[in-house]
Structure formats: C-alpha cells, structure tokens
Length: 342
View 1 (cartoon, rainbow, N blue to C red):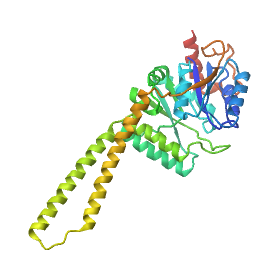
View 2 (view 1 turned 60 degrees about the horizontal axis):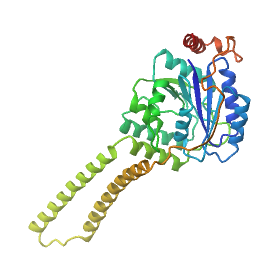
View 3 (view 1 turned 30 degrees about the vertical axis):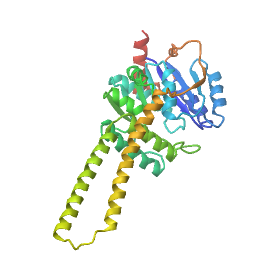
View 4 (view 1 turned 45 degrees about the horizontal axis):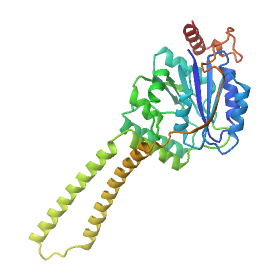
C-alpha cells in the first residue's frame, strides 16, 4: 500500500519547507510520495518547492501551474500526478499535523472506506471563517445530500477508486467534496488535532469563499432552478391574491382611492424576482458556455518528478526516526504495506 500526499501551495514559502521535512521524517519508512502544486503563488514558493524537489528527488513531485486557478483546481492537478493507493489532501499552513497522515490512511484501510474526513475537537480559525464553514456545511447538506454529522474538512484521505472517479470530471469548476459525494457514501471520519496557524494568515478571502460556494451551488445541483420555479409560482399566487383583493375593494368600497405605494411595491417586488430568476438562468448558461468553450481546469507550466512514477517502497528496516512505529496506527499501516508489497 502506497500513500501520496497532495499539497496545494499558495503563499506557503515559509511553511511548506518545514511541512515537507516533517512529513518525510514521520513517514520515512512508508511508501510515501509528496505532490506539491504551486497554484501561481506570488511569493517565492516556487523556489522553495524546487529546493525540496532536489532535497527529496525520490519522494517529491513538483507541479507548477501557469497562474492561480484556485485551491480545488490545484488539488485536481495534484490528483492527476498522485500514484498512491491512498491520497491524502492537506493544506500548506501546518495546521494539519503530519503525524495524523498515517492515522487517516490506516483508518481508511482498516474499515474499507473510500474517503476519510477529519474532524476537529477545536478549530483554530478566525470566527468569520468558522461562520463561513458552518454556512457552507448547511448548503452542502441541502444541495448535495451530505450527512448532517459529516464535516467537509480540507484534510482528508481518498482511496484509488475515489481518486479515479473524481478525475472523471473535466469541467473548469471543480468542487472536490461535491465530486466525492457524487460517487460514494462509504465515508468515514476520524478526530485529529488542529494546530494554530504559525505564520501568515488564511488565503481564503471573502470573494474566494463566495466563489467556492457558487461552484457548489450551481455545478452540483439543479435546486437553484427549482427554487426559482417555486419562487415564481409563489409570487404568482401572491399577485392573484392581491388582484382579487383590489377587485373586491373596488366592488364593495368604490370610494377607496387606489394607492400608488402598493403599486410601486408590487412592481418592484415582481421585477426583482424576475431579475433573480434571470440571473440564476444566466449563471447556468454562462458556466455551460465556458465549459463548452473548453475553459481549462488548470494549465501546467512545468512538472518535476523522478524517473519512476511509482511510490517509494518502504526500506527493509522497520525502525523510525521519530519513534512512532510503536503506535497502533503505525503497526497497522506497516502491516498493510508489507502485505501489499508481498
């Protein structure tokens, strides 16, 4: 059993080096492959990633995108170059401990899960980020039929079957969790540690969060169209009721003056609903146009990897530099690896 770790890199020049060093140190005896995807980072992340590629030529694959395409597009690019039986996706900010990677893979292997998501006893994010995560979780439950108890974390493990199915999507607006939920419900969870951010701040600004939400909203559900239909029908019912009210008022109270305010409110309300419906339809048509126009999911400028495209087989020695081999997860991981190699 081999493991690939896909890490999208954006403004991670100060954290990606220590993160990769720690991954190699912790998982040195395992069949490990690390795929670094530089998502058009404006800092010197590219130079750091190339240095890591030279430092660990048999373990690190470096993929450089031509510009910033977004985290989920970068993850898709990394999945295309990940050869492991299990693929762990993690951020470059060091908030996901490298020591937890083995636990994810072992948990997925032991219970035959297609995907294992992580859950945090305590999240070290800003309050506005936690609020946005809750909103995103609620929308995913509504649109994607996500189990209510499942938290869609960015730190997760996918088996080869799930990776293969996710890569079948070639459109320009990928949403990894939506693609996962579209192909499987054999999903497990495991609680891990979430460390405070050591350096810098989150790359997820409000516009990026809105863009991610729109990808989920329009790309993986027709519910917005159905809501538009329901809204239009409800407004029509309200319009009929208002029309009947005006007619009865005219018949039984002929002296009552007609109100300009009510007319103005009615016109503004119905015209606003029409514009919203047209906007929803336009969003769908625009995305169809861009997909039909072959808008790229990502563009790779350069790829650096070793001569062999298979993951590194574990050394014959069973010792570990960090002394973590005595843990249950490490024993299970090593046992499954040895069985797969044999």
